[in-house]
Image (cartoon, rainbow, N blue to C red; front, side, top):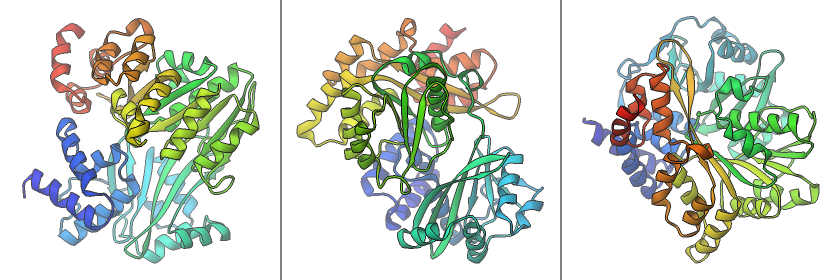
Length: 438
């Protein structure tokens, strides 16, 4: 079976499983040609499916298709002693000691970890539904178990004291529980640790507007937002409210006053929380994700009324980020939305994490948009095709395209040329820019 047919068959199987729609598959296949990623990862990047749901589906798909883990060329982890424990905290500590960003538990499959962006399998025996249930339920409260069994999904945070915090997504698949766990550092990294451009400090100091941190799943959006909130916390005397699903990084009020609200526990929805937040006298609002029309509309209104809003989108470039917001609205309202967005948008940061060339680890690559008057006019006139050129030429305003960022990293010997090409949305442009980078 060639790659094109395999992508199509997997996509159609996902449609049959009601994970995606036909339109989402077609858009994913179209976009996949540009970035040369597997169709599943492309659909995750576009925000059409969560990584947890994708891995659960693929585990069943490959099992039913008779495709072995060996055929998938997965790295195998041998040192797995803690994965025999019935104490789930030991599994989480094991995950952290292996420097894994994610741990995936799927019935009928051995536990898998994501280490520096690569999915790694283990020699642990495949997990039974009963094993996963016992492990997961051991860290849930009675109320959380009831919520999960009623709603068939649950997001929660969990902390192993002195080790790490974890974001846990629980879901059902084929009548068994699946889990995807993301590790989060206890200490919030600062800008220097992350390699974040200085322009983000300027975004943090602005009194109002909308700042978006975008990129595929696992690109460090939550960590960047946490660093921005901590910078504001240490430098400004303001009231910060976060609305998250779930609360990931825990902040301690310093110069600022910080309140953290969790979806499901403290509020029923992002949109509902945003409607009431104006009565809580905030200056800065962190919104975990702009998911739907009501949430986006409320966020734009808050930004318009003098609040600084920080949020995320699953988008691959600056123009796509702007289109994603506008396209959520009915066509009759899109011109009005473009006008409003042109007034409130302060900046967009598009992130990727690229493997280091000569050692383990990943480095941040960023595309940065700073909304100058010229760019605001392009948004208002819906002339987004020119935004990329303005970003490329906007160095004096702190702007940089993704290809420029990739070439800077490659020119410094930090990443390989192969990885630069793989992560570029426009390889022909990358090659054209190469002589200038030298």
